[in-house]
Image 1 (cartoon, rainbow, N blue to C red):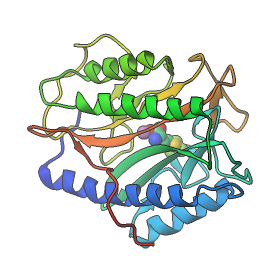
Image 2: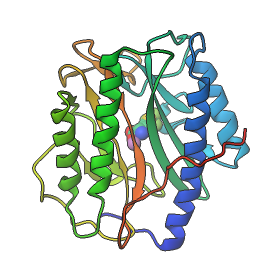
Image 3: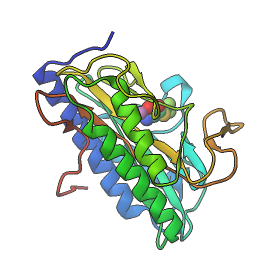
Image 4: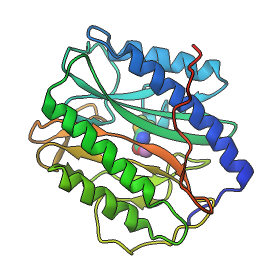
Length: 254
Ligand code: MF3
Ligand code: CO
């Protein structure tokens, strides 16, 4: 069953989403050569708590950190540690915040210093795929219209969609129904209705779609070593336009 949220509940998710957006803005400024991923994790944790929130990921099924940091060929769920960012890296950062009983979830792949034209194209392709998926978040559409749009745009750019990882409903819990694959035929699955709230999250690669899970039991990389990107927003279905609940605010207070 897909849990629909009242207008007041969507507003509460938007407040969690604003904190998530602030964290990503803050980390985007700090993601420079020489900075370690555990330093980024500490900054995120401190900011989230300063806003009265909790880092949703910490302790989730034993996950040890407050954010996920996944460099280069790592797709998702990288555990922050001593890895120091290098010029030319791309770093995917995933942030979840629980505030006033509701969760918001968003991810962004940051360029570290100057990145290659190929890496730039991959990030643009993934951002476009996310935008196309969000565009389908309208009452009356089907869940797989989102999936199909993401796949189409990803493949138009010449990239591959990771099939073993999916977007999801989000609300009081980080993972609610439905699962939202990033590929598939349109017109399938549940019909979207006002008050549904989804985490839309294309995870794409410059090479093949196969993945490997590391020995830490969390981090997932491309099998062929190709570069990957991950952009995610939490989105509410309204009576008209899709509403992005994790959109960046103009000013960040630290
Ligand atoms: N955004 C990710 C997801 O939807 C975050 C999970 S990381 C975890 O699965 F550590 F919390 F599992
Ligand atoms: Co998610």
